[in-house]
Amino acid sequence: MRMFIGFRFIGVFVAPLLLFSLTCRFALGIEPERDGDWIRDFEEHSGVTTLTMQLELHPRAEPVPALAYRLVPDDFDRRDGNAALFYLKAMGFFEQSNSQAALLELSKKAAAKAEELNIDIDQVAPHVWLTTPPGELPRDEVKEYLRLTSFQPPFLVEATRCRDFQLDRNIRSVEHPVGYLLPEIQSFRQMARTQSIRCRLAITEGRIEDAISILGQQFAMANHLGNDDFIISALVAAAIESIAWVDALYLAQHTEAPNLYWAYAALPSPLVPLERAYSYERQFLYEQLKVLREVGLSPKPAAYWQDFIDRLSPQMQGLDFGTGLDFSFTPGIDRANMVAFVAAAYPGAKRYLLEDLQLEPELVESYPTAQVVFIAMARFYDRQRDEHFKWRYLTHAQCNQSEQFSQLDTRFKERADRLGLASLPTTEFLPAIAAVRNVHSRVQLTVAMLQTVEAIRDYAASHGGDLPRTLADLVLPAPLDPFTGAPIAYEFNGDTAVLSARDSNLRYRLILRTAE
Image (cartoon, helix red, strand yellow):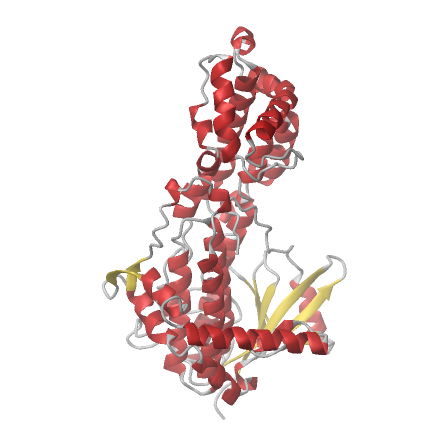
């Protein structure tokens, strides 16, 4: 699998929907489309589909002692050690060839069956089990499948106990990071899917302690992977958390499920850290086009820039930035393409130096053509990169309140269009920070909503099995919505309630069940 590290991620969020519509449909007895335990409700005016899970909850007070359950060990219980080694072992990278061969054969059979039946492979076992509620799993088939990876659980337990996570890539020494391979990242995702099946099997068999342990291993995996070098790793970590989140919703509905309010509160915050990935991505243009670090304002002769282009060309191998120029690391061809690129980029670059950087006209006129272009290229990247990255130091709610932030992409496009070709490396390599922030906040949101569900279960345990009229009535405080900084939306409807997030298409319809 080839991963592009300078990844421009498309956000997974949709516009918020009106809670009123969903409530009315239930009140009128209109049954929306169902997909397993999820209800799909299409809003014609917005063109967006809301996903709602009905949660049948059982009152349960917070445990005593309050921190009896921990999903991720606290620092005292963690030990020095590299979790990555145990994850690699769990992936079967070490002496598990028989299991890998059996899994590959099973995958081939599933693909063949899907093709024969002309259906999506997600509808064929074992893939379909990822969207199958615990009570509907074919237990014997699932157990047989899980035997193929029976070596995994001990390694995942050991990984959870480790404080550190280092894949020791030494990425700073890589000559061509844009082509760096990350096959293990996809393996993390597949491992999390297998863990999900284990968790659901444990739930349906009433092995609640095992289910909680597996959930903790999933959250720990997401937290560890968030400490990797790349934003793509953090996005996969968020996907792993999302898998665990759905399993946690199933667990919350089990009659024997303990209250995990404080277990969710005690998760690392943020669960998926981005500091390390952000720091690398912020320098990515200079990591790929390393000679750009030399670019400065002191005039240099044309001969220097001829040598500069010769050293730059191999670093641009395989990149065309949408220009149609072939940078294939063929010296003669590359030189001709670079000369053509510089000539075409020069007018916009010169204007940028004069009007945006406000350099003296005499100085700009003294520069060789190539120097004008590469100064503009580097300085434009520096400015626009920081214009995007600075917002990560504020909360999502603060960003949403800023007009400057809301116009960030529009202003960037206008400035890039004005500069022209010299802006292309920035356009190509600058990650979509706003979309990454959305994914990051969504992780925090799903944890906050889980914690709120547990707070409602705690309230019901001391109030005769009733739902609270408002979240302000809760004994255990409900977390805030990380998107808005305001309370999570809650609508009380007597015997039911709807819990939702304003900037998410996800809803929980809550029903409390008490023992007969």
